[in-house]
Image (cartoon, rainbow, N blue to C red; front, side, top):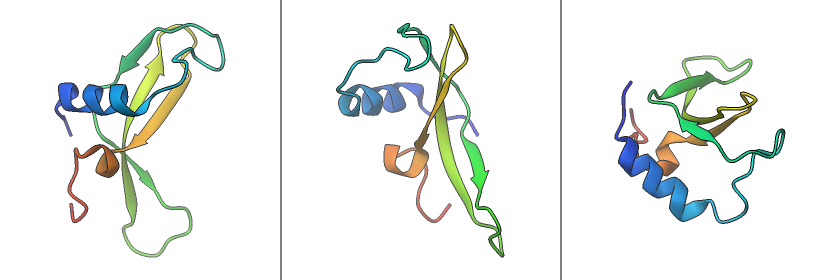
Length: 78
């Protein structure tokens, strides 16, 4: 699922207040991925998934996930 990258970037800029250096390679070179991903809940009966967006370090590949509901990109009931 595609999403509004500008809205996501505004949310990240507002909430990410500490150093933006990657904790692995110490570079500040992030790529906001353009899809919403689903993380399934482990050993959960039914269809419970967590929608997330991701930022990937362009140097080492370290990836950070943010809850797409908290960011405001997905409605809680979707």
